[in-house]
Image (tube, rainbow, N blue to C red):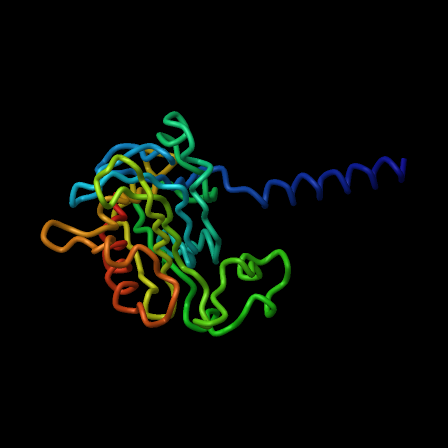
Length: 242
C-alpha cells in the first residue's frame, strides 16, 4: 500500500510539473526568411536584370542576425542565416527558410533585430567562442579587417553586354559601421501563426538615381572600401520589407 501511495504521489508531481511548463493560451509562432527580386521569389542561378540593365544571377546570400525580439520576447540571441540552399528552386524560394520557432501570447508585436554582429562581440575573434557558437566560424571572419563578415551577396554579372556573365561579384559587408537595426511594426500574431522576413535584393543595389556602381566595384574585401560598405548597408535596410 505504501508503495502505491508513493507512486501516486510521484505521478501527481510529474503531472503538476508538466502542466506548469506549458501555457495553453500561448501559440507556436514560426519566423521565416526569404529572398525576392523586384517583388518576385529569387532563385539562385536564374537570370535577373540589374537596375542599370545588365544581366546577373546570384550564387549566395547570407548574413548574421542578432537580438531578434517580438515585443519584449527575445527569439534569437544571435544566428547565421545562409539562404542559398533555400532558394535553389522556385518552389523552395516561395517559402524561404524557417529561422526560428517560439511560443507567444496571441497579439500584435513589433519585431526588431540587428543585421551583423554587435560591436562588443565583433571586437572578438572566432577562437573566443565555443565550437557550437555561430561566431566560431573562421570562414565568416576577416582577420585583416578585424571584423566578422556581416553580409555576403555573391554571383556573376554580364557587364559588357555580350551575353556571357563573365564578372564575379562578391559584395561582403563588415566592420562596426555596417551594423544596421531593422524594425517590422505591427506583426499580427493574433490571427496568424507565422511571419516572414523578406529581403528584396534589387533594393539592395539602391534606388532610382542612386544605384550601386557594381561595374566599378564588383568585389568588396578590404577596409579601404568602407564607403561602398556603408552604401550597401544603408540599401539593405530598404531591402527588408513587411
